[in-house]
Image (tube, rainbow, N blue to C red; front, side):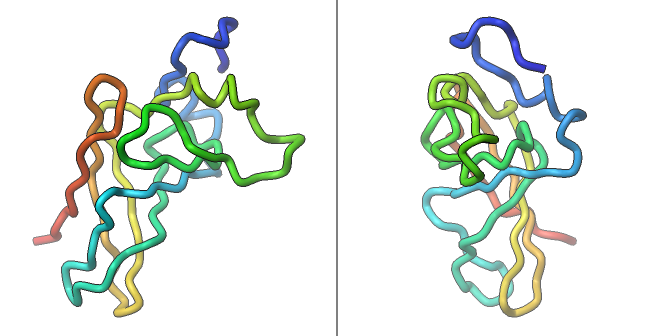
Length: 120
């Protein structure tokens, strides 16, 4: 559900149910490592954002990219209005076979913190 004003920030919670089959890509900074083998984890996905195949990079308010066909991609102006929720989860898989989950947090609409969640 898009709001009529292009400059009003779009909240992920507004559309999460609309795009249930898709996800977003995430780039934590600094890069996170596997808690089992310490290998760097480069590919992160999550469904806590708008799930519009956006690429989110820690330190930025809006998605930095949307690597899909031009005719399906939001304009730069529209993409600049989207925001992540205050907290969200992302996941990655390591070559050693471990699935790793992490939690991201936003302050003032900017993704500022990410921590690996360790399973008991």
